[in-house]
Length: 173
Image 1 (cartoon, rainbow, N blue to C red):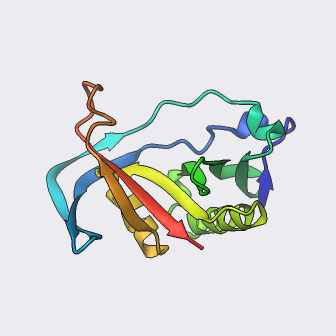
Image 2: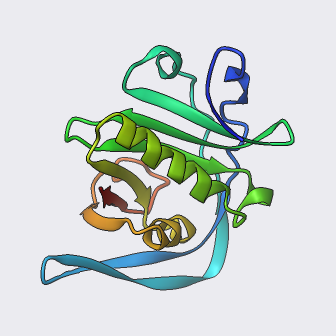
């Protein structure tokens, strides 16, 4: 069951924020005006987890922003956070699925809900950013027909712990 975040379920925000294993990186290459990539696997994988984010009440009351939760047996096991972006796309700020439910269709169901919301709100498609070291996420977006639109080598450059680049993915309706 997928439902919108409200005051009643706001405490489920961040519940599905589990980390992930970094086992490699994607290596993007721009040829003939098209982005393609290969994968470089690491000999020593490591664990990465993002800090929990602050809840923004604007996602309950805002017109161009929303959070959807995915529930299984009354437990929040996934979420997707969306907002309108200046360029006509709906921006996917976050997709999170609890690790024991990954690869079971939860992320795809949330993405489908995002497509539905974006179309209902007259956006031209979806866009999002992930890191080159999140190979599982990159594979997921590619499998769901997103294409790489650009690479940003500077966005994480001021973070001493980060050795990654940003990949911007797009899905145009």
